[in-house]
Image (cartoon, rainbow, N blue to C red; front, side):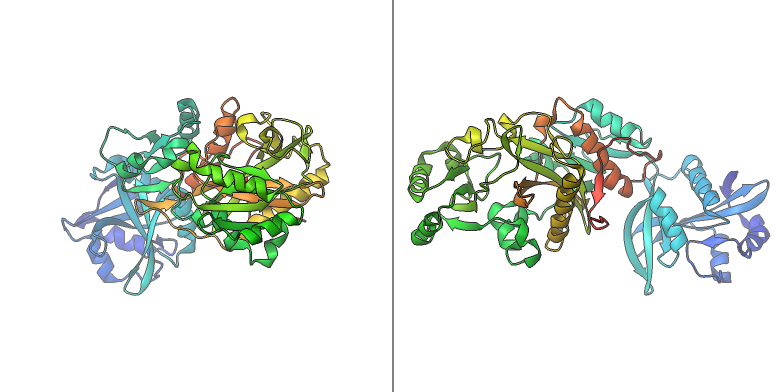
Amino acid sequence: MNISSINKGDESNVREFIKKASVTYSNTSKNWNNKNTEMLFKIDKSSLNFKVTHNGEIVSILSYFKLNILGDNFLNFMSTDKEILASSLSLLRENIGIRKDKIFLLISEENQKLTKFFQNYYYFDQEIKIQNKKYLVYAMFLRDYTYAVYSENLTQKDIRKVFSKRGNWKPFDKSNKGNPDYLYLDGKYAYSSEIYDKYKEVLLKNQIAESKYITKKNKLYESIKDMNSVKNYILENYSLDLNNLNINFIKKLFNKGNVWIFKPAGGWSGVGIETFESYQKLKIYIDSLKNRNFYKKMKDRNSWVLQEYISNPMLIMGRKFHMRSYYLVHHEKSYVYNHSQIYTAKSPYKNSDFQNKDIHDTHMKNSIKDLYFPESLKISKKDKSIIQGKIIDLLQKLNLIRKYKCFQESKDCYEILGVDLMVTKDMELKILEINDKLGFKIFKDTNFNQELFENEVEKVVDKIFPPKNKTVSSSSKFFIPITSYDRN
């Protein structure tokens, strides 16, 4: 196949080509009128027209022109089939000196066959209207995609392994003034205002702007407490303002003989969390807060949560534990990772001595390492399936209240949230909290980090930036689409 500019001498051959019934246009209209044909022979600085030939016969026509409505150049095309179109676009990319990093392709929304084809090969930019007709704008990159990864937990080797196999990615030169196409942040970097200020126009970022309504401990329960469908998954939970405590109400809660967990609404890494079986002990702790260093650093010092303590937890190796499920959200789509990390208490469980954090506190710092759901739980395969089904069912319900908004500096976004869950001896599933801006330090000595990153790239990034080399992860760990999950 060869590509060259169209000239006046090509007129008869072009007219014969566009009459073929097999020709597919970027516009679905079957009537290619004389006006459109004349434009192909018009010598105009604002447009470039190319023919692609095979064995001397025209098989594609590509028209590169400026569309004033968007102020950029676009490509219209006609071709005998999708394979020839793909080859023609490759020839254009390799042989035509267009000084841009991408060419925009304009197709009618009605053209479902081409839309499906473009989704698999090109970056979707936007939807526009021209004369009350909807068009889809795709971008053919004339360079490799670029990524900038700021991670505490992924090695450079991990990162290169994921992107190099895709065949059309390269690391963004962080010394440049521009922006990467894809920006990934985890751990401390997810809180870096310097990075957020540096990159003002990225196409995709792994952070969403609105999640506090479920990731702040008091807001989560306010959002779901009136949903009848999730009542079986939630614990008794109360928001407390330390400046305006209802002492009589709190005393009544303890008079029932219940044990309560007290934790800051905006807390992190288990800091400030304590367990109390009496109001007197709770009051002593509250009175001591003003002298505690973590309390002085808190932005919202007076918002706390009093949460029901689970007195009959399922145990692993004799210890209390909670599970962290990885909940990936991207617009209306959501997924859950089929492996959850298990965090245990340091010491064997007993239903007493509630101020002993070694018994009652389940966080990564003192946890037994390398425990995962489902394989580490010594329960039947059926019971594991029931628990997994309940996790999916809960997240399906959370999808109903989930808000979604990207930061102003990113065109598209997604995020993995950490959903902390406990299971009782009676196989009841309870949600504790949801966390954003996750770190994965506990996984440094395993390949969990790399596999999780590989899976999120496959599930989200590959759909937005189609890879040159189609890849499928061979790992036993993967994201399950929540909306299509069938518990039966």
